[in-house]
Image (cartoon, rainbow, N blue to C red; front, side, top):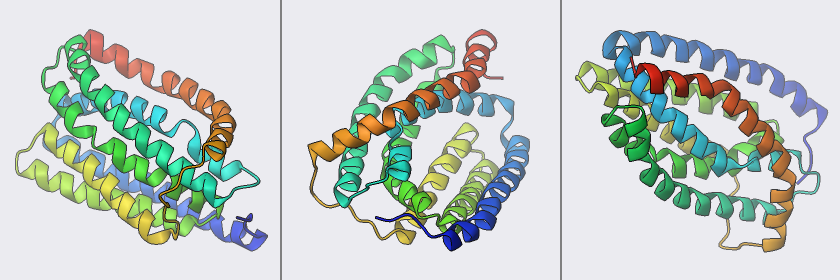
Length: 241
């Protein structure tokens, strides 16, 4: 696989802007609507669930996307290895998350949090399916497809969440929103990308990627702790509201 030409880089800039601004704007609009419909306690519960889910997702990705984007000599064997490593790990993390969920609910004194986490663990295999596809599109500077993924995910997820909230689903409306958004992004990315994993795993190529991704993972882990530690503390000491 080769690096994109300069023209592709120039074309990627406006689409990167559309992706970022569109996602922030649409997410903010959805946030205001959902906040009016479900209330602060539901948002507190989903925030605490996402703290755990996003940590598991960080372990799932382990810097693999950055390794694919930045690696100079990238072969199809690397992509196959990345895909199967991520998907195998997603299954393991689902089990670990299911075991942790009751403890996480107990320390936050929020019984429903256990069930919310159990359902939202479906995000892990969904996210696992897009790690390689997302990295390939970023490497190729195909930000038009990435912008479509982000904006369509927010819109369709928002519509599903608002509909569920109007039906009185409460916190489950936010769960539906997250799952619908992730599923929409999955469909868009697999439609845009031509890569399809083969039933083949190369240990040597897998080791190449793991070695390359270690530094990126450490950086992402530090950033995650910095951004999420306040949510953990507030949930433990002050509750979901």
